[in-house]
Length: 139
Image (cartoon, rainbow, N blue to C red; front, side, top):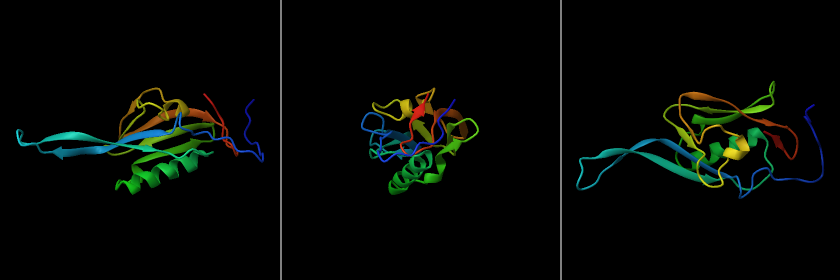
């Protein structure tokens, strides 16, 4: 039995300082040093999602906003809902990567199997969720 909807006057944050760090890489950048001809190094960007009570679509929209604020295409990383299985799905495209190995990352929230998720893939169903106001999850 799964709880699909609960309406209450209270709000319980599902993202807090304990699980709101999101680290992604838009790809490689050229690194020039005086002693080298130049090399390519993966650029990593860390963002913190504000503590709040989010639904899956809100988390995805917030990540998109933060990525675009950093000058990156927010359409390359999406979190969507699979309503048939009540799980979330992480979709990564192009050369983007998501690193859940950082302290206080969203890995526990999304129940990701791997700390590093690579581009050009649709990472399986990450986490069961309940779609209701305070958006608890069951993993």
